[in-house]
Length: 448
Ligand SMILES: [Ca+2]
Image 1 (spheres, rainbow, N blue to C red):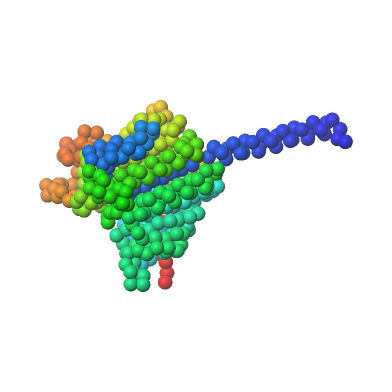
Image 2 (image 1 turned 30 degrees about the vertical axis):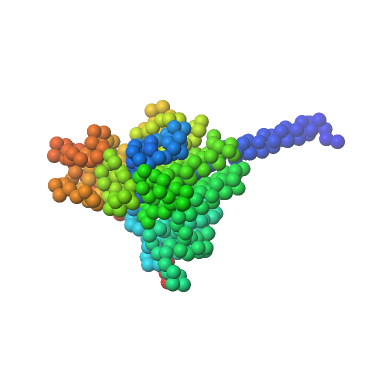
């Protein structure tokens, strides 16, 4: 028999233990899920609620009605690999020395395995993680998603116009984890199969925090739509492809609704870079922005973006503050209670005040740099150089200054009228170049 004092102590200890267990469980239950849907080469205008005159996107439009559109949302580069490096690491792509595009079997390069991806950050909080779609941060084994924080992978590891030859057959491979399971990949079924894989992952992990990264292979050329969507859009095959991705978004959000996960899941939709304009009808549209993929004009790096989290992200709103894909890592970390790496420079910032619609929330970026040759500061954008990929402008001179608040199409160069602003922004670009050069980390290289 315990004496009364010991019994009281035992009871208090027991009650305290229950409290601790309960609080820990509650905290674990409250960790939000993340779904990041990343299209490939989709233009600023290629969603109904971003102004597409012909492409029908009822699911993305509903996502925007129930969530928040970001109108001034940027990617890290106007090409695939570099853009993905910024998204995954929370850094300017030059910081991690991934500024171009990786090719299979030739470059032997990839995002350095020592880089800490958003998936690795979330793993520290016990998240289930999956990458479904196009990786494009290196196809050698040490660079694959399974080596960068993702529990599983299904997809083509690079662009769908890149090819390898196996047993005399050419084309891109479909991989599961680290093995090729289909070659060449049956591209007309990819969007559907990625969607099914994503839905399966959400269902399997509905009772624990999860991160689904869904970087679609489409609408990068060559375009493929399934039989159900082929020849259905008023915008031709490109429209078919986007409308199938829109269907996919509907499947993902519908699954979250069905499982009762809507109030605990942040879904982000955007694209890796602007439209490939030289592909004509098979490319997208970035209007009213200037130019597209490969360029640092707005059309190359400003993307349509929708964030959705019913009850948290204010419904039916839009945000015109500057935000970027490199903000994803610090923002997800903040919302998941995870630490942002402190042993290295991370350029991205926590934009949760913007997505949660906090009163008076402002962009954390006083400056945003475009490949080290342009900068946006407030509504000013200065280019020290640049090129147009389709509509050539022989009269273009540099430095070129635009006020995006009145000239979103970067059409009227007002550098001559604003020498002090040109001088100030030029200095910022120079300082940025020097800072990156002094604090650059290497890409990964496989020795053979
Ligand atoms: Ca791309």
